[in-house]
Length: 355
Ligand SMILES: Cc1cc2nc3c(=O)[nH]c(=O)nc-3n(C[C@H](O)[C@H](O)[C@H](O)COP(=O)(O)OP(=O)(O)OC[C@H]3O[C@@H](n4cnc5c(N)ncnc54)[C@H](O)[C@@H]3O)c2cc1C
Image (cartoon, rainbow, N blue to C red; front, side, top):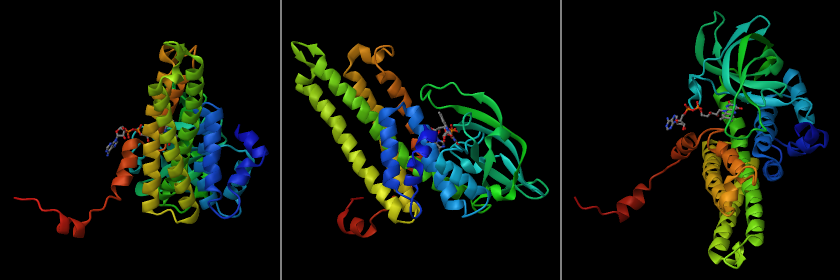
């Protein structure tokens, strides 16, 4: 699908104009793909169009190795993946061990990454590495390096609960050497680069929820109009119709949050406050997705539980990934918690707790 989107000029349209391009269009694209295709496809598309392209655009420069790669990524002729999570460091990316050592030809990379989505079908991967000094001793500094996927050893393709349309693999880098220009952004700023790319992905995840749950809602409404129980269509039982209306209410509120945040991302610097806002939208959307998908599934009664009869069960399992991928609920809440502020003056003037 990414090749087709590239050929049609959709990816260039997303990233036209000043950085960070048309974020609203990116969100609309994520929603549309999630509405029309399995969530696994939507996750893969957003990974490339949002996370990978955001980092290449922001840190790739205007000429040379990375700029050439970005042009091919925009044409859909080179598909990018992103590898941060390791067996040792998942939520805590400061613990990662995959090592990049400076050598005369550029950087030598050694280590493993546990989850790389698009890793089996992609062409290159942005790898978060710990930087070593010239003697090979690990430092506290992290960097992001762009590595051809053909240079990585595929260890296994993960069997997953859902998102089967998306390949997610474990890979190893066994002394892979990349040129110095493969360093994306400044050495030492790897975590900041990753945080930047992930903010775009997180917003896209929220937009995917709009698409996937919107599709489930439409199926559920149709079913409640066709299925008759107690002498009338299910929709004629007001309790059910109102529950479906509630799903729409929640999706409309989420749509407002996604659009508002997309506008902010287009017009404001991506500071801690905005990162936390995006995290808030993502965690809200992810939890909502699980609940709303289950609610739509409920309208099908037993058939909702039968994968050969309805896709709702599979869709429910697919959207569950939103609570993990791009950073877990808990990590999103940690970012939001950093923005909690008390109101000292109002407290002093209005709270009178007796001792
Ligand atoms: C299908 C799939 C595709 C993926 N694709 C990619 C990919 O393309 N690239 C990539 O880099 N990663 C990818 N991931 C990895 C994903 O981002 C991580 O699984 C996720 O960030 C959590 O890391 P972990 O699995 O190591 O869990 P852990 O970090 O071990 O956490 C386990 C649990 O503890 C919680 N927790 C951890 N620390 C704290 C704390 N301090 N306070 C409170 N709670 C805490 C977590 O939120 C989580 O619920 C993918 C994962 C899956 C399942």
